[in-house]
Length: 151
Image (cartoon, rainbow, N blue to C red; front, side, top):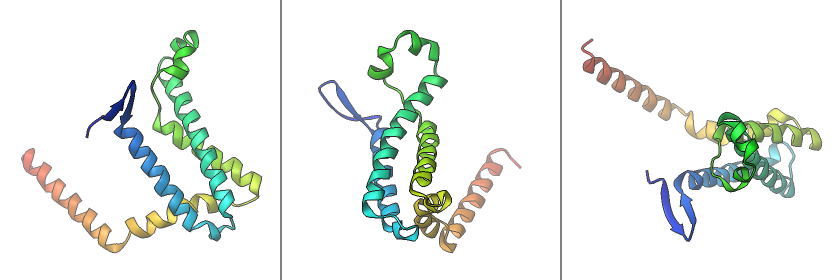
């Protein structure tokens, strides 16, 4: 995979950012299709998407700073905004917290809100055909490694 897809001036488009953006759009599409299960309107889903994007970026940056020499960033505050570095786990943690507070504000079930995002993936990824495929891959890789280490 190419880390930098292309550059325009000093700005580079990275493949990691593209994958995060595609995942965000697919997640929104899945949640939008399943929104009626918990009684959310179109505007509610768009509000949640914007909150998740903003707090996801903030969480990614905060987690990156806290796990990568926070004293450096506290002594060089310009690097917090101008420097690079984001953490995916920060997106997940702050995203779940954002969903939690959003569910409290809208008085909906938090687990129902999270389930809206996961139902499509469970239906598509955990069907019988894919389970058989994953078991076949597990057996195949097990035999490959056993053959390599002479078991």
